[in-house]
Amino acid sequence: APPRLVPAGREYSEHGFVNPAVYHASTVLFPTVHALHDLNEEYRYARRGTPTSRAVESAVAELEGGHNAKVTPSGMAAISTALLAFLKTGDHLLLTDTAYLPARYFADTMLKGLGIETTYYDPLIGRGIASLIRPNTRVVYTESPGSQTMEVQDIPAIAEVAHKHNCLVMIDNTWGAGHYFKPFEHGCDISIQAGTKYLVGHSDAMMGTITCSAGTWEQLKDAYENMGQYAGPDDMFLMLRGIRTLDVRLERHMKNAIKVAEWLRGRPEVETVLYPALTNAPGHDIWKRDFKGASGLFSVVLKPCSDAAATAMLERLSLFGMGFSWGGFESLAIPFKAKRTATEWTAPGPCVRFHIGLEDPADLIDDLKDGFEALKATA
Image (cartoon, rainbow, N blue to C red):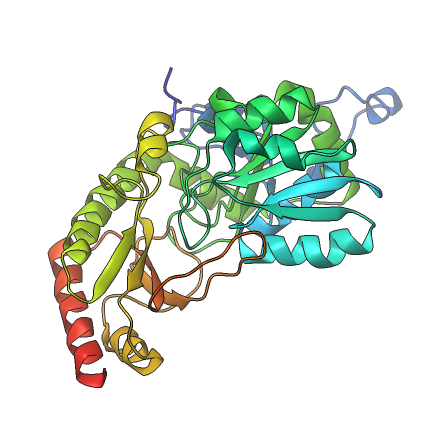
């Protein structure tokens, strides 16, 4: 059944109001000593939950199809909390070579310092992941599509092999937003999102989410509380509000992105459009099999040109802003150089990642025409 995006979490509202109250809270008062020490009390201290956080967690878990969820102050906090919850000294992590760069940095610094070894793997490895699993491999971390270069992973195949070896499967599910990719239907144990992106949807709050299967919930919840993780109530409210319109926003992002991506495909300056929703694009077959839709994020490989020409193109754009993050209502464009250690990235020209927002795609195309004129004038 589709998630109930509109009413999910409403059981935490009071007095008939549509939205739950935004609880700015810390201390909970108890009427008796018995109640004070009763661990079954619903609310004991704000960091351990309020009606606001319960409503958000319930809605996120229902969206992703998981057992329960926790929210963090950022997407990176969700990644680090999930990994630290299930990895200890002496463990081995398999991390997709296309992972979000701060996730790689976390593995290469903090996890390494804790005595946790990371092996990067080809995102297209599928069942071949079996050859990399060791007796101490605990987690297989996926991200589909991959950051920047948009490789679509065969998550069911990876999950089947990982589970045979008693490994947990985590996914960064930000691109599909829990709406267009259902991680638990495809074998994932834990789904992570930068709620900052599509769940908030308006570029005005930092949030992360961790959704768990029933079997992983208690361990994640314990680690989350042990590390003092929590998100502010106003940001939680903004994400809950964003979830209510997720379906209609994502559909418009997708429609706009397909129009712009198809136009870019026909440009002489473009070598490849990396957007799995397009027919014959890399990853299209698995995307079509596993995903219910596509978001507004994709990348483009330009034909060989100077960095100065690519820079001129980007700086000429007026509707596309240059800035990190994505998932808001605004369109963005940033240059990138893919970081690889397990695979090789051999793009012939400069690469640009686009986020297609909610503007009129005809206006975005006109803006890109101006950008290409600047590129040609500088080449």
